[in-house]
Image 1 (tube, rainbow, N blue to C red):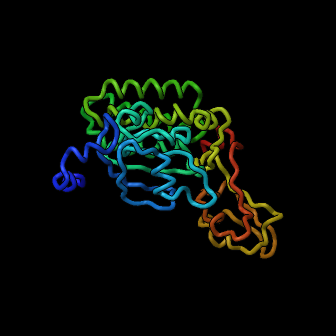
Image 2 (cartoon, helix red, strand yellow):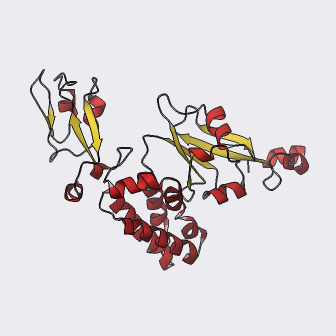
Length: 284
């Protein structure tokens, strides 16, 4: 509706002169996520993702790298850095596995796990399903279960095949657009970030060090000063040690809340991944 006053004042022809041949005019986006400048922006159709994220949005936060941008709300796909120069129009976004939607644009950096990110959006659509049709009601739930196994390090490569088959069934069999578009974040993740997904399966490793069952916290004894900041911050009593002596983390008590790492002023708390057996991951 934001375009309506402009069109009334200046005419439809002038509005249509902006944009591309098939996607005319402008589009308002809500630019959010790991960018310097977030907010509501208006750009002509055909502007590139790079224009929006790096010129208008000011690029990534200091020290971080662009990883993906998710467009179109919970049902939109995540696009990688290789597509930053793609034009923003209806046809290009759909071809890339995303959508224009309501204009949501969420930028994520290298600290984001794409499995966890896809799980976040699928959780929303699964909960929002009205339950009328089986493909949406059951299919999204089964897909979510597979993602849970992947993020826990309990999945096999057969689960990836199952995930793709379920996604296709949900798209083809759902009665409304919510179900038909719900698998988009998952399909785009498998399409553009498959190597990261397979790391969870084959190596039981979360490259972004986000999935709790696949990480553990340790303390570098050479960097630790024994200041007790991590010990005092730990809510589960997992950190032990004497003052001015290197501390330790009891893996059985650690709940991986990240409080110790945030409290440490000496970068002594480390997050490791790719080290847990399936049994250890199941306990987490």
